[in-house]
Amino acid sequence: MRILLVLLSLITAVPAMADELAKPELEFIFKAFVTLDEPHELGNTKYGKRRIIGINGGTFKGPEMQGVVLDGGADWQTVRADGTADLVAKYSLKTDDGHVIYIQNSGIRTASPQVLARLAKGEPVPSSEYYMRTAATLEVNENSPYAWLNKSVIISTGRRNADSVELDFYRVK
Image (cartoon, helix red, strand yellow):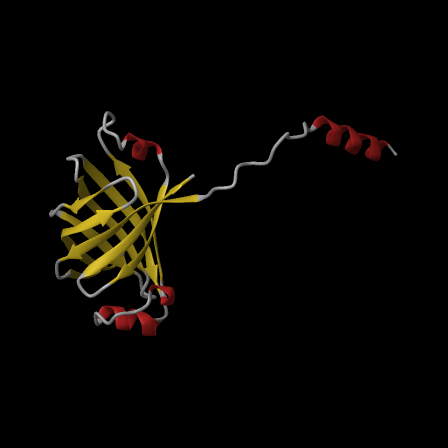
């Protein structure tokens, strides 16, 4: 009986919440077409197979912004023993109204060995056959009309093409 009273006192001591936690939703921001240089293969290192892929241009377009991908960025990849690629890309966008946006995009691309082999050959592979997801940090001048990007959690889903990458960026609401 004493245990039952202790349990009842604990249950009544926990305040009831008036509402549930907000469930995240995704808001489409833009689609980027990023053109790439040939990969520079460093070979196997203590962390895995390293490669660097230069970013040399492209475009992006969404409901509230559009522009170009600036030359000069890169994707630094580490390929694990199972073929999964850890992706770390850093590059910049320039909006049509002149604002520069810095992106640091980290994530993974993984699939079956057969699909990864097709991607490595540059064959077109439907994005539904592999997993390519990233978490992005975007930085822009705090006085620009895009300053809201500085305070947003952003994710993307992607497709690898022979000499480019397509990425759809979403703000987590």
